[in-house]
Image (cartoon, rainbow, N blue to C red; front, side, top):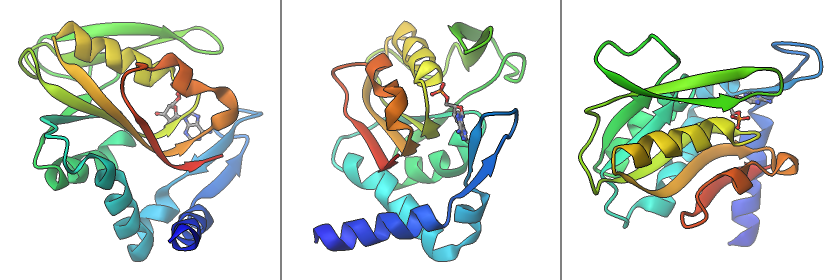
Length: 180
Ligand code: AMP
């Protein structure tokens, strides 16, 4: 079984393209458009993202703009949950709450609708990739400010050498299909 899991991961990795120096010099950008366009990789990724959370009575998948939307809504359907988008400033139309976090140079903010869900809600936070963990940590704060409980994190890829998972809630599992 271990061998099967490894070969599936290798297959997915083969379908993720690395674009050097995008969007700026020094960044090795992990491009998942090639993963999305391969029908086998698309189906396997969808399955592997949802599988760890199937029995956890998740209420919502919170997906991070923008690549967290691509698998996030599908994951929500697999988990019989709703989907809540976390977006860049000024994109959500109704009243929002906002969290600012540090980037390598400067800072950025993420927003969520203030009425996105009720107190006591169980949430899985999803994005395509975790690097420093700054955006997933900001999403965690947004969820907790509304009284939600983060019961897990879900990523296709994790840049393990950046230790991003250290920035996340210690009580929730971090599931990454591929750890680089
Ligand atoms: P971070 O907040 O540092 O964990 O960064 C994660 C966010 O930035 C995710 O939304 C990713 O899509 C994006 N991101 C960061 N680094 C990369 C990378 N090397 N390739 C693709 N996306 C990245």
